[in-house]
Each structure stands twice: as C-alpha cells, then as structure tokens.
Amino acid sequence: MRRRGRCAQWALAAAARALHVGRSTATRQLSRLEETVGCRLIDRDARNFVLTAEGRAFLPHAKQLLESVGDAIAAVATSEGPVRGRIHVVAPTSFAMHRLVPLLPSLLVAHPQLQVALDLHAMPARLIAEEIDLAFRTGPIDAHSLVARKIGEESLVLVASPAYLDRHGRPTEPAQLADHPFLDARSEGEGELRLAGAGGPVRVRCKSTLRSTDPLPLVELAEGGCGIARIPRDLAEDSLAAGRLEIVLPELPHEPLVMFALYRPGRNDDPRVRAVLDAVLDAQKRRPSGPIHAGEALEPIPSAPVSGIRCLTPMQAAR
Image 1 (cartoon, one colour):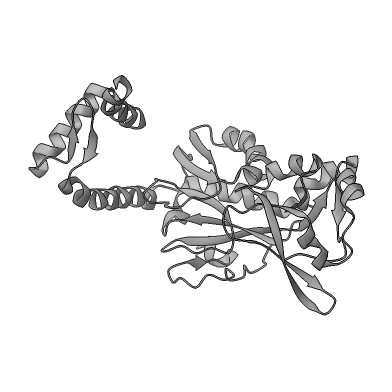
Image 2 (cartoon, one colour; image 1 turned 60 degrees about the vertical axis):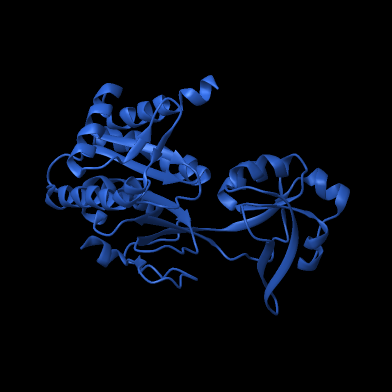
C-alpha cells in the first residue's frame, strides 16, 4: 500500500527529471497548462496519476506540436556551427556494441557539445511518441511515415559447439536441421530458415528452443551446447577462430541480415542525426568486407508494403 501511495510522486518526479527541473517546478508547470486549456488533464492524488479523457484527447496534439518545434529548430540550425544538444538513439545490443559504441569516443571528441542518449533494445516501436531521433533496426521494415536508410548487410551463419555436434551429429542437409534445437534471434514467429540450396531456395521449419530479440546472447548459448544458432558471422568470428564454435552447413548461404537507420521526415537536416549517421556510414565503408561502397545506390526495403517509408540513395540523402 505504501508503494502504491507513492506512485503519483514517482511519476511526477520522473517527468521532472526528464525536463531537468525540480518536482515542484513540474507541478507548477502542469497546473499552469491546465489553467490555460481550462480543464484538468491528469487526475493525481496520493495513489493515482492518470490522464483524464481530456488529457488523452490533448496528448497527441501536444506531441505533434513539440515535434514541429523540434523540426523548426533543426531546419534553421546552421550546418557550419557546432553540433550540439541531445540525440536519442535506439539500437539492438549487438549492433550497438560492435558498430556504434566503438565510434562514440571519436564522435564525442569531434563534437564536444553533443549529448548521446543510447537505448539498447531491438524494437523501437514509436519514434515520435518515444522521442527517438534515430533508430537502427534490421529489415524487413514495416512502419508508417518514417525515412529508412540502408546501413549495410551482415552475413548469417549457422553455428554450434563442436561438443554438441559430436553428441548429436552434424547435419549434412537442410532437412536435418529440424531435428535439432534452434536458437533464434527473433521474439516472434516460427523458427523458419531460408537457405540457398543447389536446386533453389530451401525453407526449413526448425524447433525454436530459445528466442532472443538480439543475437548476442546466442553466441554463449551455442558455445554452451544448447543447440544450433543463426547469428551474424561477425559475432561468431572470435569463437570460430578459437574453436568454440563450428559452422553448420557452410556450403549453403543465408539471406543476409539488412540493417536500416530510421528517422522522422526532415531529420536528415538535423546536424545531430547527420553526425551519427555519417560516422556509422563512414565506418561501414572502411570495413574490409563492408557491403556498401561509395556511390552505391541503396536498394528498396524488402517486404515493406506500407506506404510512407522512404528509402534513400546516397545522392537523395545528401540533399
């Protein structure tokens, strides 16, 4: 009961921290807003802190207004001045740790007034509602009214520990994969594998023993003998070199894992978004096996039937 009694205080305190003001200041600002609109927007007492019907009707318009203010500021920000301010970035853990985090030290040295808020999770559902400036996500992409820019492709491999394969046998054809526990980097759906066989594409329905929203934990699970995992080859390189993992069916290639950067329309002109994107794309071009080369047109997003998504070529993105 005591914890429930403090939930309103916690909610208001969290809002105050997000605004970088004291709780009493946030309370006064909320009261002034309600006086301006002429109605109560949030019911709050010792136990509750919930939107009223009027508050629920007001909220989407307020978010749209704040978004417009941010776009207006970005539109007039000079590209010659220093990159400053906070950027909220969301990325899958494996991509962040292997591709994004290594770039941050030099990025922050080059732009000392830039502040990066980095969230590590795989599913940035609502960029506008969650005030996300830039999100990285694997395709196919199905989202409304967002700009999607292809960052690169990762080769996928099936791996398992040598000890596991010694005990359970090494598959010699795709159909045999269905007899093994499958470690999948997807939170939903069945464990279907699509491979390129000699006679054309091959689909195998596997038994998903474990699913993860990110492939990084699957490396250790595969090393521990939990089954066969499908992961980006870059994540497996150290384990393969050390003999802790072995590639299964190496002669059959997989559909590549495609990474996209997502942001709201107009944010390509935001110096903060441009600074992070440029750093990621430059690093991709420098990779020895990087799939993106200077001047290469970015392909349309695969399996993205929803209108409102914009895929950019390098020339379009530079405008």
